[in-house]
Image (cartoon, rainbow, N blue to C red; front, side, top):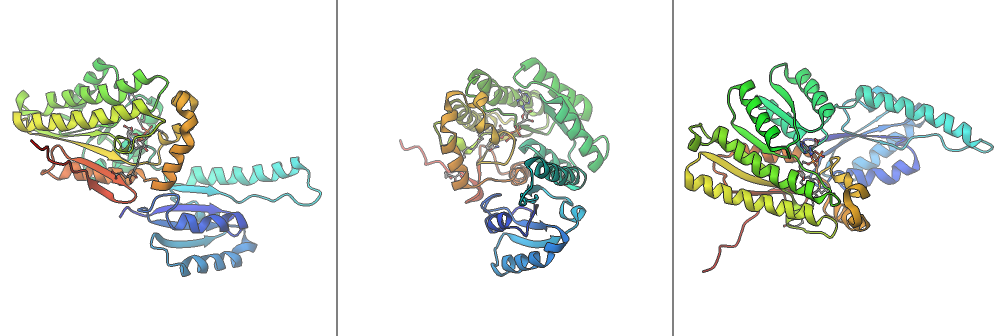
Length: 371
Ligand SMILES: NC(=O)C1=CN([C@@H]2O[C@H](COP(=O)(O)OP(=O)(O)OC[C@H]3O[C@@H](n4cnc5c(N)ncnc54)[C@H](O)[C@@H]3O)[C@@H](O)[C@H]2O)C=CC1
Ligand SMILES: CCCCCC(=O)CC\C=C/C=C/C=C/[C@@H](O)[C@@H](O)CCCC(=O)O
């Protein structure tokens, strides 16, 4: 089971929050596999009401609810939170002008925004960021390769602060540019002296520019695998290693709103399984496995709302969102846990790891081919 996440709900003694808390606490929002610590924040006069809400939640004995902490202090409520649900605001009172209401609420949300920035966890955004965190926690030295230089530099600064300088480097690179990707691999080996683990994680969801989706989600995974072998395979005189290619449960639960994305994720599975066989037959000494997460709470997932990403398929977004509600949404930390298991378990080669809210980390098994 994943580590608990801290979720603050402001205006927690109010009616709207009251209608949300039980659903949050039982896993409807952050997934059936994600334990939660609930921080309930409201103003001082509402603390007695909050005590009652705490007792009601505790009486429900919800398996995912690890703790419920009522408070009227912003620095306590927002401390190290992974997620904030800002419900608290001033209701419109009789005779109140709209401009007065807006002015009062701007002040409230400004205070809470500042608290979020000051006290909340500088937490992960994507799956790759969670993986980097886990690798550094396991004393690996990590090269973060990403198109987004701003995010990359910010990520490096945060990781240097947490793990010390010299353990992480950021290399700006468009993985769909084969030469740039080759240079990124070489820069990594130049920096750290060797290469042992490759995670081909970059991915986009763009059904409008679907050729780009193929270049990033599939072609770059193929190229990243071949480059990884150049630096790790015994066929090149190297010492071996491991490669993880990131696919998706979209390859098992296809849907009408992302046909090319789905095709690329199918391709990643097929390529990875074939390359794992090649590595075994060719005695490369490199284990190659594929990871298929279900819905994960990252910026990519929220691109389903964007017509720029979805093109004509955006009209199917509600179907996608119904699936998210039905199957739940995972946290990046659980995907990173799966990646670490693929890295650490030396028996795994050609494995297809699936990570879902219903079954957690598990493996897909294929029917043996009949003659
Ligand atoms: N979020 C989800 O629900 C799921 C995501 N996945 C896969 O997980 C992987 C990571 O996705 P998320 O972390 O969710 O998305 P994300 O959008 O948070 O992270 C993707 C990262 O890839 C980078 N990137 C995009 N294009 C690039 C390029 N051309 N060159 C270099 N970097 C590039 C982005 O800057 C971003 O940092 C992707 O392959 C995605 O398909 C799989 C299943 C579910
Ligand atoms: C909006 C575009 C970004 C898409 C990012 C993804 O890849 C989302 C993941 C796509 C589909 C997820 C399906 C999840 C299904 C599981 O929860 C599973 O329980 C369904 C049963 C199928 C099985 O286990 O084989």
